[in-house]
Image 1 (cartoon, rainbow, N blue to C red):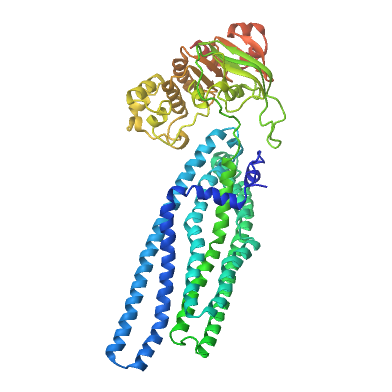
Image 2: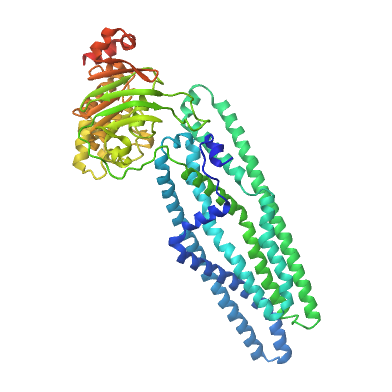
Length: 615
């Protein structure tokens, strides 16, 4: 089961990519930075070669000093030997310092810029999926994918590529140097280098240190936590805190099992690494001692230098194994992101040029539609529409009313091409929606819903979404028509007033006015109002309705409403029952029919509603 299946309920999945496919795909993001990464690789290799040089020079220095002492005994000669060795150590140490800085700077420079590009790519890949596919993804898990998973990919670029290359280059250089001293020493070292470089990571995978289980559980925990935080008000109101906390603990406990498995395997791997290193050093010391006894190498100069150099090679190859867990987690995180990005969108944009539209009429002709018909885990197994028809003439204000679940909001979803019907035609101005590029189609509509999203930005920025290049004067005019002028004038920061997360710093009425101002600024020929006032109190609704009338004036308008008193002045009212138009007419005509509309309108009448009608 893929990560998408585990967290989102088995949406139709793409072919599962192999680790090799994932690595190739990750490397494509590095292409613009290949030159800088080459610098990082070179710097890392030189750093470790410099470290090996420091250790070998230091280890050999004692023997060189003793040889000089036995050969001469002159203070001048001895001090000359000491200063020569110190200079070489200082030079190699300086090389290590400079290369260490260069490696870290360039490696992370590349990694962080690639991650920024990856986040952008992920965001743009998500746009065609919304909302049909993204609705199946818990918000907490979505955040986990964009933030946590992207961060988990960072070790691939910063701590995997360079260590993998240098784990090959530097040991080869060390073995080549050892070959110049004594070839047989290479035959002893090489098998241990291979074991720590290749065998150890294989053992890590066998021990379960791939992080797959942990990453899947983390997505579930993040989703639960996000859900708990967003619903904390109702949780407290119903005294459900204790039970929710117990559920959170239980969900967290499942993640702890994955953590224990992951980091337990990591601990085992590090312990095995120390064993491998110890055995390798003992083997090289034993063989070097044999060579020294036989007089093949110098016991005071070449033997300690070779042992010291071999240690660098061991810790370098083991360092690659130590990063193997992070590498596996990076690959799994990348797979989660790519599986989401590779989902086929519910709607395919094939049009290249928008056709001319003479008038903003709307028509549904024999439309059949079912949500997620191709997804057995999300399918409702019920057709929302089966042969659905409506016609809205240009410039007319038509209202859709009816019980919940009859398909009113689905009409809006299909008009915006967030979903496509299984059969039938939907057209604007006589042109099928599929003839429009999605970007051009979106320009045809201004939408205000009960869930119009207000970003954590200023009022001006939120209004400017309606027209990206709008002037301050245009924004002010839209705000004036939406009834925001007095509120903005009374606010110390005016148009720079911060709306807060989801508009939390302004009232519900002001949030709707901002959404209306945004729609006014867009100046689209068709207006879609989806329960635009349902979450407001009656008094606020009155003032917002005034702003909505300014918005809809002269435009083709489709209003979805539960509160019938808000649509009594519509040109036509369509009553939807079970996915079909059961009644139609003006308010007066429908009241005279005595059907669903008349009965429901009478039920909704109270003193405030009578005031609304009179207004």
